[in-house]
Length: 347
Image (cartoon, rainbow, N blue to C red; front, side):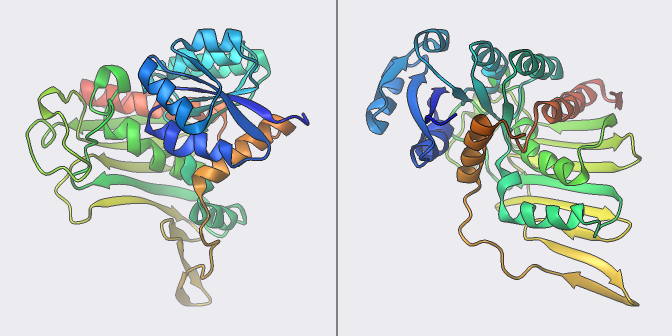
């Protein structure tokens, strides 16, 4: 494909206007030609700001009336499945923001639609494109950690309930911190572990701080109508015997404003990811190995867009695959089911 990739955006919220649209605009290989959002005033304002020609309040109309090669899905989670499938069936490659969907069944249907259409479906797990993860992945792939048998993933904020958007609306989002920020560190851990198959999960969720007024480090939230958990914890067992512990919270009584971290333990070494540091035993000594120079100023969102465009034009396999999305969604859905049932869930 020699021509520029013609891109449509479904959903014109912050993730679209701060990340997707600006980074497509910097690409010499792509251009955003159409926007769709149910909010007429919003979609027209965004189109004017970024000089985008076509606007729609119905994404089906956009797909039918505009020649597109690719689509970014930037809607609330509830609409990821129908918008993605519609775009794939219209012959478009799709970059869908995380999480893939709300249920594993939805995510399987999305993967099947991509296979049937012969199009790329990838997800917005931008942490994979950070210099830290890229560096550590090279060590993992070289066998420096040996067989990874245990991992911990943390996405915990002290008082970080979003004061904008629909992040506290379970009907539209499917949940709170687990399905929003928790999936970032969960995906990072799974990616570095080689995406093993989960067999059993045990999860718990809490609503302790979010349903009352308090300090909001990310703005004031509607505490009276908060319907999601403010904290979730879980354990995942995999078919290779490995286990993963996950903590995610919008609000918790911890020291730091935010902790985003993945830690790995293998029989040849262990590692923390942010920043990357490796722990090994060599020649009768215990060693800490720290990469000194990482690429400065690497923008993981920009790389994500650039690599998606490259995949669309060349057929190259995307870093985050539709099949991996199914595995991640199985875990997230299983943890919520386990929390509701009060017992471990087999997958």
